[in-house]
Structure formats: C-alpha cells, structure tokens
Length: 401
Ligand SMILES: NC(=O)c1ccc[n+]([C@@H]2O[C@H](COP(=O)([O-])OP(=O)(O)OC[C@H]3O[C@@H](n4cnc5c(N)ncnc54)[C@H](O)[C@@H]3O)[C@@H](O)[C@H]2O)c1
Ligand SMILES: O=C(O)[C@H](O)COP(=O)(O)O
Image 1: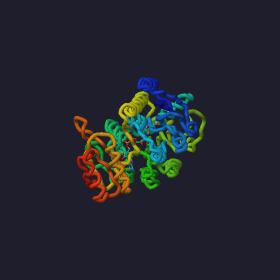
Image 2: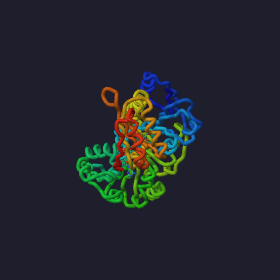
Image 3: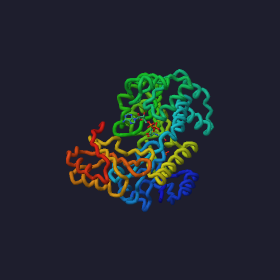
Image 4: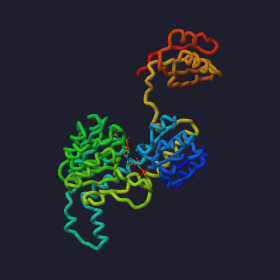
C-alpha cells in the first residue's frame, strides 16, 4: 500500500509505516497546488494543514483514505471525499495539551507584554517602568467557548492559576460544568460579557462559522483579552479587527484568515500594524510531544486499515441511515446466499443502505442485518423465506430512526 505524506511527519512515523509494509512517498513541503493534480498510485494520503481540494480527490483514482494528522479537518473537502467514497479520519486529542499550553502562553504574554519586553531588550531599550504594569491573572475570569479536548485542558490550567472559569459549549450540562469546575453560561454572549479573557476552542464547520460575531465581541469588557487558537473562520474577523484597531481589547491569535499556505516565506497582514495583538505562526500543535503523538496515531489508523480493514476516527460516515426498515436474515454460511437475498430486494426496487453480516460459532450459520430504504411487501419476505436450503428465517423490523 502506498502512503503519500503531504506534510512533515517525524522520522519515527515514516519508519513505522515502513515496518507495516507500506511504501512511503514523503513530500514534507507539498502544497495544495502540488497535490491538486492527484497523488498517483497512493491509496492513503496523510496531511497536517495542507489543503486537500476536490481537484486532488478527483484526480487521485487510487485514493481510499485521507488522514488528517491533527484535530481540525476543515482543510479537507469532506463533501468531495464522501461523494467519491473516500474515508476521512483525524487524530483528535493528541495535540490538545500543546494547544492548551500555547493558550496559557498567549494569555501570559498579553498580561506581561512578554513579546514587546523581549523585542525592546534585543534592541537595547531598557523599559522596566513601562513593563511593570501587568494586572496579574489570579482571580481573573476566563471565558471558554467549546469545552472539547482543548477547552478542557485550558480549563484545568486556568483553575491551577486561580482563575474562575465561565464556559459555553453546545453539549455542556450543569453536571458536566460541575465536574469541570466551571460556571455554565446560557450563550456565547453571556460568556463574553462575564469574562476578562475569552478563549475560543470550537471546531470550524458551517454551523460555527462566525459564531464569535460582532455582537459577541462588542460585549467584551473594555481591556479584555481575546484568544483564538482554534480557526480564524469561527470569528467575525472584520469585527475583531475593528475592536482591536480601536484599542478597546487586546488579542493573542494562533490563527488568522490570511494565514500563508506556504511553509516559509514573506507575507503581510493588517494585524502586523497593531501592537495590541500577538500572533503566532499556527504553532498550537507544534511541540515535539504533540507531533509525535499525532503522527503515531495517524500510523495506527493506517495499521488498522491495512490489517483489519477498519478506519478508526472515521469522520465522514453517515451517523445514522434514514432507513426505516431492517431485514434480519439468519442463514446458512455458504456462497451465494446473500447475493440471492439482495437479488430479491433488487427485483423489488429496494435499496440496501447498510449491511452487517456476522457468523455463529462453528461457522455453519450467520446473521445478516440489512437496512432498507423502503418497506418490502410480504411477497418479497416470503420469497426470501422460501429459500429453505439457504435461509433459516428472514424477519422485517422497523428501525429506531
Ligand atoms: N492552533 C492549532 O494548532 C490547533 C491545534 C489543534 C486544534 N485546533 C483547532 O481547535 C479545534 C478544537 O479542537 P479540539 O481538539 O478541542 O476538538 P474537539 O472536537 O474536542 O472540540 C470541538 C469543540 O467544538 C464544538 N463544536 C463542534 N461543532 C459544533 C457546532 N456545530 N456548534 C457548536 N459547537 C460545536 C464541540 O462541541 C467542542 O466543544 C479543532 O477543530 C481545530 O480547528 C487548532
Ligand atoms: O487542527 C489541528 O490539529 C491544528 O490546526 C494543527 O495544525 P498543524 O498540524 O498544521 O500544525
């Protein structure tokens, strides 16, 4: 199996893929346009932030699995992958501590003006009085939007700093909030109005796009810190720019909308002119620890696919079919039985959406459950049941959709 790496992975991961028997095509500096014409014979594509477009997917006839060696998958055209029957998987949780550590670093940097401190030191300017104006973090309220893996790690660290936390997340219940030792807010806006520091940890999706709206940002207290280590698109960046340009709030960002796609080179951004914003180079996940954990998780997904035919962390699987009926067929385990059952369904114009076949001890009999989009009439079920030398019983049941 050929595995195409379109980003840099640690040497140990390449070695491990080799020992699984994979042929590795290593392209650590590949860009989205480099892979747009396809990745040749490779069956598996592993990327970090390299964008996987529909052109890349459509021009890669042998591609069957795309692995995002990281958490966010908004750099992969999921729709195009699903249309082509290509699995997409990610490696969640493996870099969450690294991102939480950067989040705390950005908060500390804002409070103590660390980057400016260092810049002035390097240019020979001693300004002790200027940099002796930090507020301190103890007792400051941290607002968290999104209590997933990263949000949770940030909460732990903030509590250790003596910071009360108020949080909103779509699935945050009062019980979960109690476990996390946070106050549960009813809305994003409520968090923004109550906190001194707002930190965003949402996945990017059509539903979360610009969830951090102009209204939310204008609800922040004067002098508040705004931290985004998630994705630029979850924030209304025009509104953020306006708030920052007015000097009303300060920000620490690891992500912004014009992030260069190339891995090294010159670029410009309107944020460069604002001294109340500290921006890092999308390095949230870039610790050796996190990169190793992510890479080994990606390798383990390849291993499972190669050796068991399953895809761990499969993201573009239809969560639940809409099929209202299921046919449970207990049958003798021999060639052609399922083909004949499916032929009866096909002749009746019925589509089998999902199907699972398991065998009993002794390997003489098996049970197949088939999710059906249309209710077969009694004649179809009778015809299947009449195949006495193949079928033990076929029973139609409603699904719990
Ligand atoms: N800066 C970096 O280098 C870096 C590294 C890792 C992850 N990230 C970003 O951080 C994000 C969060 O990572 P995580 O590991 O905590 O993921 P996670 O899946 O554990 O958490 C995602 C959060 O987003 C929320 N969410 C998802 N869909 C939503 C929707 N439709 N409406 C409302 N809320 C929704 C979830 O409820 C959850 O709170 C990633 O998706 C990625 O974009 C950035
Ligand atoms: O979603 C992620 O995991 C991060 O954005 C990491 O991106 P990177 O792998 O390009 O550092």
